[in-house]
Image 1 (cartoon, one colour):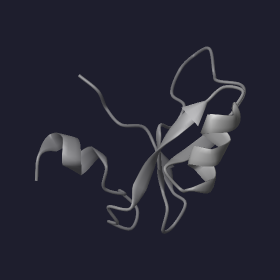
Image 2 (image 1 turned 45 degrees about the vertical axis):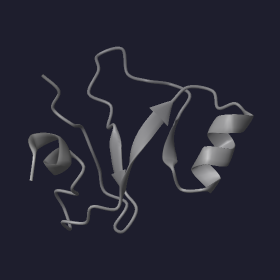
Image 3 (image 1 turned 180 degrees about the vertical axis):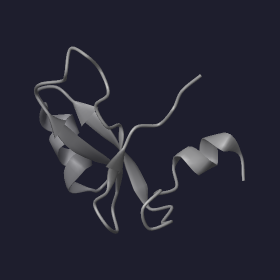
Image 4 (image 1 turned 90 degrees about the vertical axis):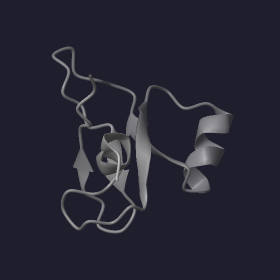
Length: 69
């Protein structure tokens, strides 16, 4: 398993059924993508300090931050 694939695996339950969390005011396309389960909506406000979660498990709803770089 590559590091990129490991980042998509839920650290809580081990499921690979995870999606990216998208922040900001959602338009029609984002809402439809969330309804299809392609993304998760994270809300309109993000922390100015960073650290907002960017993945959500569709099995157990755990959220985490992928370490990039």
